[in-house]
Length: 368
Length: 82
Image (cartoon, rainbow over all chains, first blue to last red; front, top):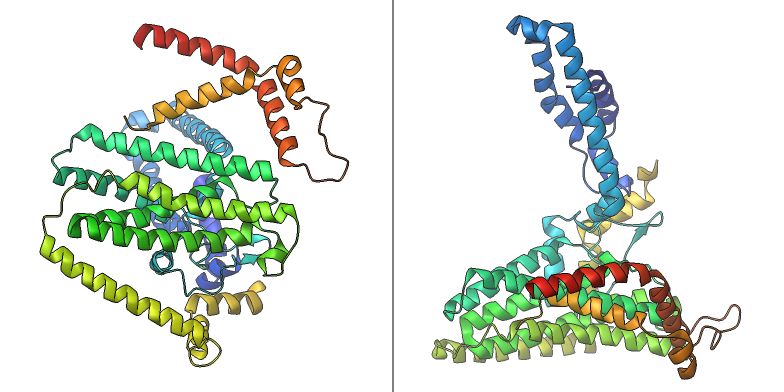
């Protein structure tokens, strides 16, 4: 539409093409996804630009200089106001920051969900940095993202509606009530954490969005609890919810420990002082808050007596056996850590393709 | 019944009111939370008490004028519809 837009887009396109796609996405830490806008420029913008060429043939009305001038004026006005809106949106909502939190891919989401449900074997919890900016979540499993919390929040509301529907307690406004209540508790939690971080004067790089992400991860465990409550009754609900509570507790402690405690204490060196004591208690309190919220937001949804009692008892046996196996396995892993299982763990860590890619790019000629 | 966003807004308004109503001369000084009390030395990290005092003073300063407007709007709305 804009007369200047056509040649500009055409000129910009070859310069983007010159870079290989892989290196341009990995070497630049600010670029969260491959830039597909150049191809969109090539295909999408070409179509709207052809009509002005054909306009004079269509009728005398559009051929008049006055109308073409008005069209150009209108389009510049529109693009100008769009710029202003973009600038103001960026001032109130940090869009570029939010984009970082949604730069995920399927492998990351799968790994992160696995980490949330079973965080005991994970060794390296440090968020990686590249030139003072944290690496996007799809390259680093430890980075906080907002995709999983948002999806889990929506899913939690839907599953809550389903659970209430099975008890004939559903009405459409209950969905809104659930969403409002869960959101209010989330805000209260984040505000409480912010206030306590302020009171303890923690020097940390935790932003408010980070806190929202970390406190949003507990919805995954809540969904697992409710679904198991739907399928297997109260026993399944209590068993799986307590498992998820435990894993979220471990996950939060191991993640926040690196962020809240000072550097030396995070590496395991004992630092004396009331300040560090306080920070440690704060970390524990934030992590211990998660199971409380998880129980508080789900217990009223699983109220029904178990209809599938036989299935439930079978499932009970299965879960007990499973947890026994896992705990035995964990014990053995810890016990033989320096001997038998060590190489296995090391190999898994190194064979992580994203990690290797990261190492290559950060150390190799990708910096050019 | 449930703790909704509306209840959260109400609670936040009440809490901010409660902080803003604390009087510097009559209350805070008697408790030992006055402006000139308990300020740490230079270079020393402020403790919890200092941070809390700072927060109270900031809320009292910043929220005084907006609270008048918000409170009057709330009073009118609650009188009409509540």
